[in-house]
Length: 198
Image 1: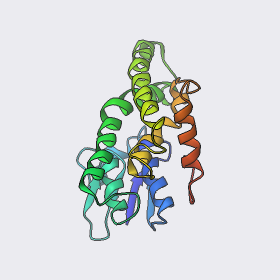
Image 2: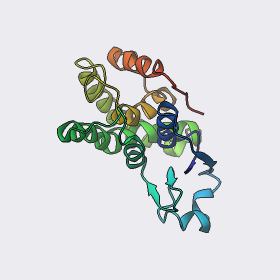
Image 3: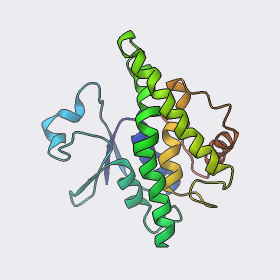
């Protein structure tokens, strides 16, 4: 299988981390978002949204959206529960990641790290912090009760939220006030076959 992605993207890193944890063989094809690689005709033929990551199966079928790819690749592993309720709780965190976490923490990181925090984006950057800290507080509350977001075991919910949380400082977020999150980050780093970003 082929995975199209950018190693500096948190959404792409999710897939790299999962593939490493589960030892999934794949071909990684690097695309540079800022250079316009995802807007090339050949790529748009595979994903009309022009977004990465993108998983291309050996038969040519493709799956986009990082959390959909995660759950597809994690099927029949310990990272994806079979129980319907447990699966729904996991997906609840993944929807939270896409709507309440990533739009704030990942975007603030993009403005600071990729764009160099230009003055005309400073107000937008600072506005992202309120929503980002709210998301971190929700995670902290859960991680004070359970070692992982969906309960006692590592799941794709943790991988989804780990990707941008562990580099939140690059978006100006201070994590020292979130001890449960810091412990959770270290817990994930100690997982067998863990790999870092980039």
